[in-house]
Length: 59
View 1 (cartoon, rainbow, N blue to C red):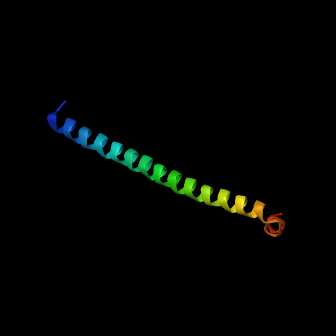
View 2: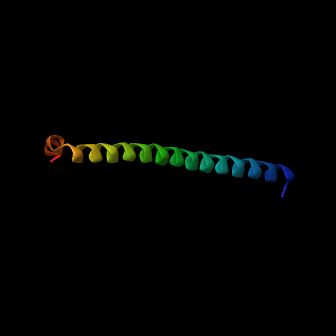
View 3: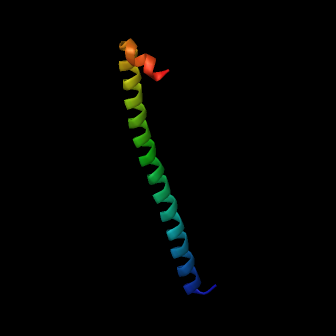
């Protein structure tokens, strides 16, 4: 194969791996944001279980 073909193949794989890496980073950020939101919901539920009038609204 021509050296030029290997260069194009290298850059093609590089772009593909960068896309995969970007996707994984995106998933990690979404997961962290979801964990923060879930913790907020847990605190809200805990607070509402301490206050019976709020617990009735959740049902």
